[in-house]
Image 1 (cartoon, helix red, strand yellow):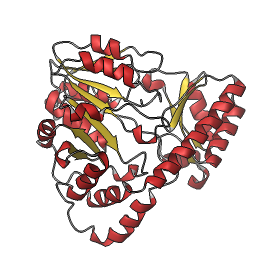
Image 2 (tube, one colour):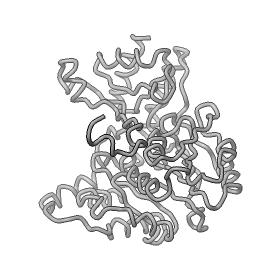
Image 3 (cartoon, one colour):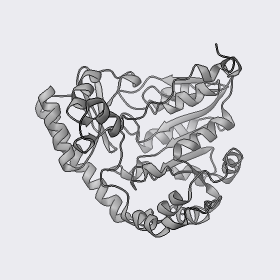
Length: 364
């Protein structure tokens, strides 16, 4: 043990860092091929690029980047307030919605506490619980989706947080209004329910209304992001919606200027780009249909999706990932989630989807 390591909290030392999707540049270096020949379909990024109105705003304000951001994100909160029809004090901004998950953990998770999550859900929930010495209670899934009644039964006196990722990453499943309403009727009031809705704006069907619980003053927080619907993943900007009392608590651990100036300006402009979101949803719907048709013809199992990615059962997920990678197609192996037979593919442009289908067809 090093001279420094012995002073580090054991909970931190036990943590396994989050592994993001493999970048194009790294794959190109490993394979010795041109980065332009590689397509990345691993990280659920928007294949159309950033929202045009966000791009216009970024170009306009590029020469202002010597200035600090607005510490309170006044204009972005104002725009969110107008769009979502809740007062500005119902919002908190984060360096991606991920940072707001960190705020929640800092405030509520510690040794002796527990957090409840689905067996197949965003792995960061488990990482954050472990990092703070809290117990991560993983509840067996219903198929590949959340079993909310089982999650309800997993709540115990020390439970502080329940995470509901809806639509769910990494499986693409979604629980409906009926299940959520039944869960919310019975969940203890001293447990914070986190509705992680990173994919809700690109969901092909009407998603459950969780904002009603915010309006009712319940102990919930709804998390959303500009990464998916508006193509701003590289700028890292997300937000949480909750009652003002909860927002005030989370603000205590937020660092000043956590959302950079360019991100605020781009996100504020992007909120008006409804045509871009509509175009993205259409692209995802067509892509999911084509990949589903391919799987049906080949009798390959897949999970119908409510997001911009699909889970496909290919037998040996790690092996298929490697073979696709050698062909310049980066997807995501699902072994880290305990889904060794599956890969996850982000829905891309029509050309990217066809290339993925062709290469997967050859491999299988």
